[in-house]
Image 1: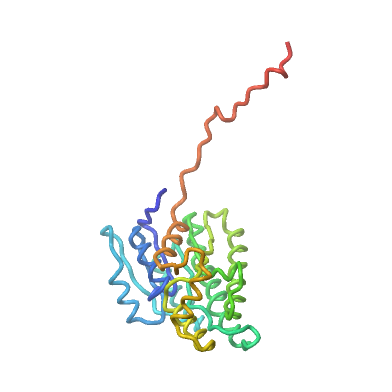
Image 2: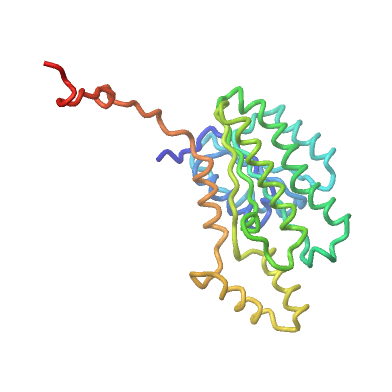
Length: 265
């Protein structure tokens, strides 16, 4: 399998820490030119220094953006694309706050849809034209297992993640013939700051310790452990690999001899 991403440019959201950072590190190891996106210039600058350069032409940079400011996001990404096309887009954004769905306010849904669905859509609209010209594009959305089975106490997140998954499936059908793939990666319990925040809030509401809450979460996992960001990054890297060579079907496979019993004398 060809996992060489040399010459490919990758734009990765939420990449100052957690899953986004792990994905950036993995794609850099495979030779991609990585552009990080997040709100903290300080953290982004630190991550850029961690990204390896496996060939002389490989370059990494970052874009300071706030997904709560969609117009600003639009302007900055347009500026980036005026300098270079993006072949890979990894949509990754911190999840909405927890809580039962009946307690959620309309503003929470609006903010979640803005930061996830609408920003994903905007980024896709901006990068796909150049992907079509190159006849190559990879879009990966880091979503959640809640796409398949809703998670307790994450009402707004479950709703938003489901919408993103449906959007992605629709988009995939529209752009496949242009050589562009769209995939969703659905992490379960993965050790990140985000997971610890969710478990901490849940523990406080239950009146138990964080350690007890973590143990309870582990019991729901068949292998008995949390995932790691590096594991999610490896799956994402698989989803963005260049296309395999077209299979040439041997002519002999297409030649079917007529059964002897059906031959006429």
